[in-house]
Amino acid sequence: MPYVVRNENGEITGVLQDNGTWVEDDDPHLIAYLKQQGADHIVRAKAALSASDSELARVVEDLIGVLIEKELIMFTELPEAAQHKLADRANLRVNLGGSGGLMVGEDEIL
Image (tube, rainbow, N blue to C red; front, side, top):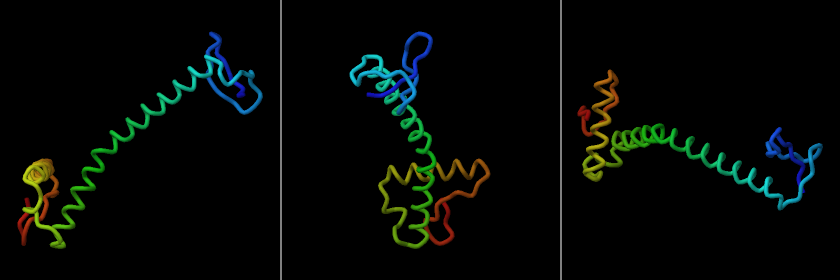
């Protein structure tokens, strides 16, 4: 049985351990508030996950580059679709002034 804080419309705006208005666990306003907080949390988590996708893509590209440099895998061993995507991204980085190509052989940069 939590304590809650309500706004001027009577809607719950917070849940406290003490020093608020006491409500039953099955209070419909409390249930609605908790569902909304859960939904907000999920939306924020999905946004954070989506934002980290491009960063993780670069990590994977760098990892593949290291594996190729150490000759643990060959670029040509990757699926053709992966080769095309990696090559396209490397070319885009080079066109933007970077040197972000993948090493595919001795002195050969994609």
